[in-house]
Each structure stands twice: as structure tokens, then as C-alpha cells.
Image (tube, rainbow, N blue to C red):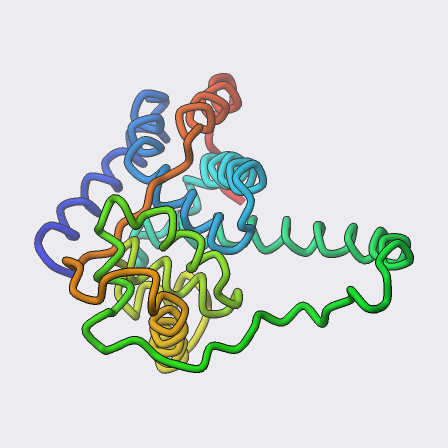
Length: 239
């Protein structure tokens, strides 16, 4: 952890302590600091704006209710990300369960010759190494294209790529957040980059400047406001 990361973690710990002591303004400051990051983590799994916002809102509520059980062995940002990812995964499972009930009826309405196996078309070529997508994403005019390509990644690669290339988490932090071995994180990140290089070939100029960025929730202020309303009259507690 570098000096800046250490300072941010220390600030987060101070905000947590103030929140436990009854300072709701400190919790709101914590939310503003991490809202965009947590939204991106949720969206990388759910790929739906409303679902991601609801997952983050619920994650903030759960974090608030368990602040006293937080242990500083992990960074607060990693702890918050883990809670958000768990909430997104639970929401995703519920969505899949509902889809499993609805799907048979929907299949009957689709002509057999139009049915598809759900797999994305294979891409035959790979972009040059200089076209690393986690570098190209800083181009504002490419933002929507990059986000679409990232959203199209298989889930196991999408979350790793978003946390590393967009949110800047290191391999160890991602491993903790996703409960994966560090070696698995590295392999998935490498494969995600290769998939994006292939998908982006012909879409973007391989000579574009570098650094991945992505926007947070268009309604992130609503998430913070919603969480603020929920915590207003409820003190944080342990498990």
C-alpha cells in the first residue's frame, strides 16, 4: 500500500469511528468517497443500472449496521467492496431464479430457426499489444464503447477487469474482495484484456492515450440520499 492509499485508509477509519460515535455526516462522507467505486463493482456483475444502484444501497445499509464489527485487518474500501459484491451476487441469483421461471414461456414464442445458444460470436483476430484496453479507456469519446465491451465480457472476467483496470485495486485487494487466489485474479485479468483487445480491434485507434476510467452511477446522489434516509434513525451495531 502506498502513502496515498494508507492516508485514504486512515481517513476511512476515522470516518468509521466518527460514525460509530453518532456522526451521520461522517458516514455520508464515507459514502461520497466510495459510491462510484462500489457502483462500478456492482454494475460489473449485474450490468443493469437500477439493479446496481439497489445493490449498492443495500450494501451501504448492511455496512452501516455492522460498522462496529469491522476489523482494520482489511482496508475499509476492500471491506465495502466485498459487501457490495456479495449483495450483487445475491441479487443476480434472484434474477436468474426469476428468469428460469419465465424462460420456458418465452422460448415458446421464439421461432426455432431464430433460437441462439447465447454465446457471443468468436473474434478471429487480436489487437496489437499497444491497444491495451485498460489504457485506451481514458479517451472520453470512447467511454461508451469501452463500457459496452466491458459489459459484454463473461462475468468471471468482467468483475476482475473493472476492479483492477478501472478502480485501480491491486491483485491482493481483488483477491480478498472476490475471495479468489491471487494467481486466479492474474490469469482472469490477462484473459479479460485479451478478449477486449480482440473485441476492440477496428473500433478504436490503437494509438490512443492510456488509462482506464469509467463513470459512476448517473443517479449516485440518489443512492447516497437513500442510504442517508435509512441510517438517520438507526445506530450502527455489531453482528
